[in-house]
Figure 1 (spheres, rainbow, N blue to C red):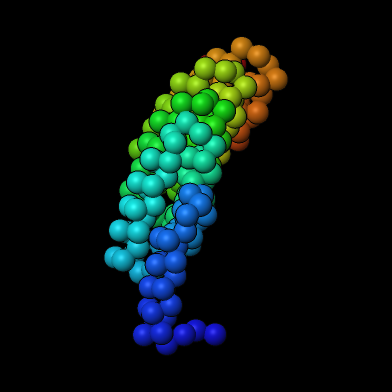
Figure 2: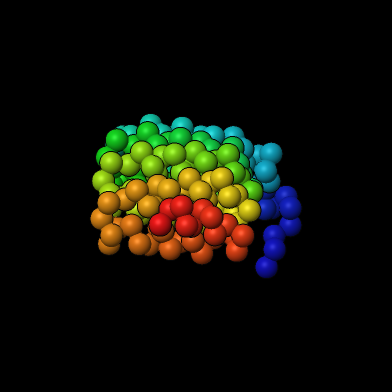
Length: 193
C-alpha cells in the first residue's frame, strides 16, 4: 500500500527525527541509512553526508565504526559514486587490519564495475594489507568486482595475488582474477604463473 505523497513526506520526516534522536550509534546509523534510502536523491544527500560524518567519527579503529560503516554501505544506492568513495576512504582509515579488511570487502562489494577509479583505489588498499591471509581476502573481494575489460586492473590484481607467498592464501584470489580475465588475456596469466 502506497501512501499519498503528502502523507509519505510526513512519515519520512518523523522517521528522520526519530533516527536522529537514537542514542545507540550503530542503530542511529542503521535508522538514518534506512530513511535516506527512501528519500528522493536531492533530500537524501544531506542525510547520507550526516551518516558518513557520524560513521567516520565513531571511533575510527573500533568495531562500532566498522559496524556503522557496514550498516550505512548496505543501504547505499549502487550508483552513489560519491558515497562509495567516501565509504572506501573511511574503510582505508581503519587502523585495525582485520576490521579494515572487513570494511574494505563490504564497501567494494557495493561498487559497480564501471567505477574503475574506485576499484583501482580499493585494489591499492588491498595490496597494502600486511598479512597474506588478509591481503588474499581483500584482493579476492576487489577482483570479484573488476570488469572483464579492465585488463590493467586485472593484471595488477593478478600480479598481487601471484605475489602472495603461501599457496593456501594465494589460490582463491588468483582463481577469481583468472575467471574475470577475457580469453585474449592468456599472456597475463602466463606471466603471473
